[in-house]
Length: 610
Image (cartoon, rainbow, N blue to C red; front, side):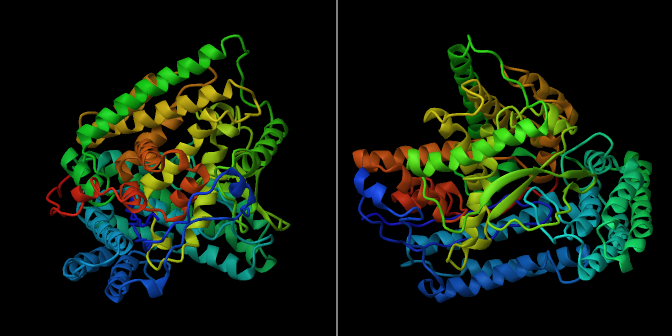
């Protein structure tokens, strides 16, 4: 009988979001043959995750303390005092850390030890944010995006559509109006608190305010026009008593934002902050927060090898397909949505029935895409007038948006290239499973390496198992182009974070290192901007690293179980244990602790001056 346990850390920068997860050692059922597997119900899962009553009381108590300290970053009220919050967290963090360090975990289950490490990683993430990223004093986007997202959180939009059926309720309408009125209060804090502004981060605030995809015309200098366009359209869906207030309220908020942008431009030459945080800091973050047993030299090697593998496998696929015509993006939304609906139907049946490599869950809705509005600076918006029970609605950019026209990711060319990453069984699937985890620690924890690694793994897995892409075999080439782009995120990201390369140089370099290949369109300026912007604000994207860790875990499990290895059992365990770092999930699933031994001894954070 095998024993299970897991752990995690998360990449949080502006709003530190590292929660802990916990899963007690649970006995696995014996591995059964194909006939028994076919008889299992569709929602079968082999993982028995422990609930609150199965955890040490000391672990439950310190979880509450850590989470209470973390919750200070999201205080009650629409306009938190960001400087006061950061000061309070700095003051209280050492005492909470001493209490955590003072707990004797000897005799605890592997599961509870993993949960303990998760809580430690959350405190380390908070310390790293307060001492290294320092968003409240370094990053103007912190305040610009806070003001915009304060409004955006009340809207019916986002990638995974949320919110009211139209018209907006009176309560929601008043919340939107109040959020607009609070814009000046948030930005005033920025003027007072930004004592070590970074010019490159100020450029991002000016170039890409708010959420959504970076798009020409979305710059802060156009905020008045963009807010007016959004407000006039949204007012049509407001209750009559509030509709007339929206456009004037949006105009006042837009003037505040534009004035803040002008203030940034006037002060840019006096900004002395540095965008690079140094490789020592990256090493510390990787080990203590992400709980990955790698240093930056190893990450460079992994990225270099993955780049070579991606290009080689791309060549293998393109050689096989050399006599087939090149495939191109959909000509219109009718064509695209037809491909998308077909992919959604095929992929779920393929995983659960055909390949029998993943369990469905009874609470999973059908996933369907639909075109949304793209209204800067909020991004994807919708004004739904009817409910669709049992359907998870995913918004797509309008047909004239650059993401629909020439995104290098290939989604528009064949939805299957990224369907498994974004929808089912990717981010939508993993999110629904993780939030239902019965452990008192894990549901609130999101680990970037696990999440992105799982979804990147699900891009490549269908290629190896001959998934029937709706556009045919040439779609397979696009998967390796995406792998190449993710390897470049690590390679170029390390150069930027070390100061070896400026953000603008890295953007230009990414366009050279990920050129048009096969059916791929190459990285365009907008995508290059998005890639590097995220790195200097939040750190490295570890989709590539997480995928390689899953391959390693799969190999270890295969060697342990030999011919008894079962893909469905492996995948169900991988996703059911919580969004935790894969090094610790490997310990939990296999009992192998060679990586975990490197992570137990915490080292003080010494890098504090980017």
